[in-house]
Length: 457
Ligand SMILES: Nc1nc2c(ncn2[C@@H]2O[C@H](COP(=O)(O)OP(=O)(O)OP(=O)(O)O)[C@@H](O)[C@H]2O)c(=O)[nH]1
Ligand SMILES: [Mg+2]
Image (cartoon, helix red, strand yellow):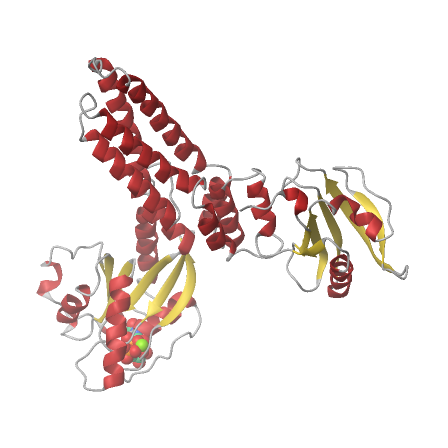
């Protein structure tokens, strides 16, 4: 059961990061929020006007000279009365203000995401917008920011609402016809409803195809460097990271465990993983390292196979490592500075082409810019928009997939003779879509989102 706003406590929290800064913002929301200035011995505020106030502690000593603003509910971010205190970013000032508020009956410190939760309860935002906001706060790259801001502004809510409305409208057409069981469904109506459902179905499929893209932007992309021992994987990782992240040595089998470095390529945040080199070995620790390397290669979005081009065995090594990955791969024939052993097999396999096989030298950096450019292209390809609708979370994908399945099932039925069954499929499709908007199962979704939120949001 949701609590009604009237019996709720007034919540407060620091909305800016803790620590020393020029300014800090404390937010207060709830029934008693408008009375905050008086609690500090200051005159009350006019709504929606930033005003200067001198806040005093209970002994009348000055805490800080601040700017404050009050919004009267429901015209506020949470839908309740909200007051913001813009104080100086001194840990002592912030602590004094928070302690002062905590001592007042009816006030308590907010939980993570509680302001947004209240906004949701008061219909000031919807769940997809709340997710977008969570992603916006987490965003590190510009693409992440663009995607999150769009979702916050309704880029997911709007199409989902439209699909839902359209299915409901088809449903009511159908239900009206079910009432006239004796008469056949007019042929034109059947055709119209089918066309409309087909259109929504196709749009949803487009959204599903875009899920991978949405996910990649949101959570980042994984690139794994794998190859035989001593090929130069760790040298390459250090070159990409522009720091000595991994140990490099002439001894084969130097890297035993995976080492990951976070980078940004083509606006996408990328985790590049260096792995243990492959060879036949009886050393059980090294074996375990190689198993982990295989697993990482299998899980990677992009597998980068690194082989030592100065060794005659490089093409056999390449044939072996390529089988580890299931996704896109690139092959780097390294140590070009030492001269690459010519190999007739280089272009025999159908996956091998000028585009997928590059020669580089991790030692002197030659070929690196081509490699980075090629990676950028692959990432942009993975990102290419096939639909304007971007699903960013597994729960969106699951719900749309279910809705698609129900629509497909309905299209396989006869509207004229099986109208009841069709109507049932339509209803199931709309309830799957309602889940995205948070009309059903909202508590589960909220708990999941807000567990990752910061306090004060
Ligand atoms: N000449 C030359 N030497 C290289 C190049 N890249 C790496 N090396 C050398 O090759 C040796 C192995 O390099 P690493 O980067 O440790 O190779 P690795 O693939 O990580 O090896 P493992 O961790 O054992 O699997 C080191 O001595 C590097 O300096 C290159 O492009 N040219
Ligand atoms: Mg290594």
